[in-house]
Length: 550
Image 1 (cartoon, rainbow, N blue to C red):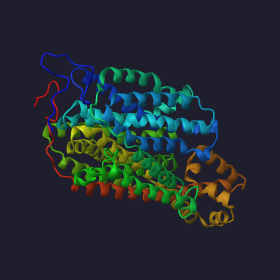
Image 2 (image 1 turned 90 degrees about the vertical axis):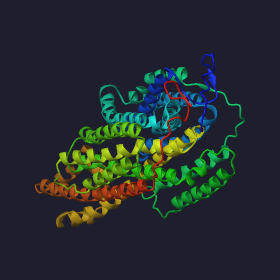
Image 3 (image 1 turned 30 degrees about the vertical axis):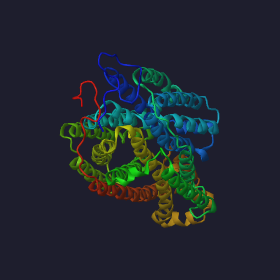
């Protein structure tokens, strides 16, 4: 679709109001900087909180609601992402960036002031509403600035910024918590976000639409009514309630009914928030599958790697967080180099196939870890995995954007971003349940006979405490268990050592099972790359300063 530059006309200066989201001139670079800051802080907010959570929980109590601090944020983000994408195509990115930043800032302030776990969960969910805008629109804004072929380079850089935030986040969260207080984990966002907000107000255009639009409120409501109970069921299933319980079954049933209503609504809507016709394009559907599978594979690793580092290798919590650094560094390198190659060659199919293959290899290498493995083996495996993911993820965005007209860019990106968010939201609780179930089954089998007979007479509550991998690997948990073994007299120390060996053995086997799940997801992503066709990347989708024109 050929478009004339709406800001340029013979002898006329640029106007403050225009008819598309296109960004031209020097403002492109200010907008690009604002986009990177938005992406950085929305991603940083997920990782910086993780290392502060043990301190937060000890102060606010409510350990049983621990997961909801993250689940509330993810739910709010997943539900709002497609709505932001569609509305920004209609009315411009600027008002929704501003709304997202303001809501994110308010949510950050209230999170920092929280005096109870309930207040923190509410504030995090509110913060997630703002983060939905900050996460969904940066990639669309790259499309507002650069043509499809140029986007490869900048998509790689955006993904590099995302990777950098995951490296800095855990260490920064720990340092802030130790040296200031956990409240500043949330306050630290605010001054930089205010600067980015000012840059957005200055650099992004105000868009005037002459067409009367129909907002798909019914589609938004039914999508939220589908996602929320589905994610709640996945979160509760196998932990709070059994998978066959009436609570979980009811939640899934409600989600299924809402999904049917959502599909009916989207087929009838004049301007749906998720255009179902996108999925008639086989290449777009394949990019969605690849995006979802990559996210689930990555979460399968990220969920249990710190547990392996602490529970098996004996690393501290702080040092275990650094084991993610090699993967993210290789992710950044592969993202930037892959993006440059796409821009230079205009081709991507060989790159995404190679990325999928390397990702499968990295996931497979992790399955070879044992009780006696050295941390250097983990580093090598993570570097390989990061190279594969980095070659794949930015390319998926570039490919999807190239398939459809510029006017639906925000909707395309938001749909793909929702797939990425759902991958993590779906994978985390399921994999956590599989890990806990496997460990509880394997631990009694690995215990020596004397301990096995002692374990058999424990009460259900005691057996649960001894079978909780998260509790056992923590220093507090180990100290409490050690104290119980000391009460057994002179043989207590030997029995405790035997118990820890059995824990490490059972934990390693359980973690390796999840790594194999990660291999399966990575293999599915690789198969998805075979279905993606090589389509010429457009260079003149719209005119901008420095371009060739139309």
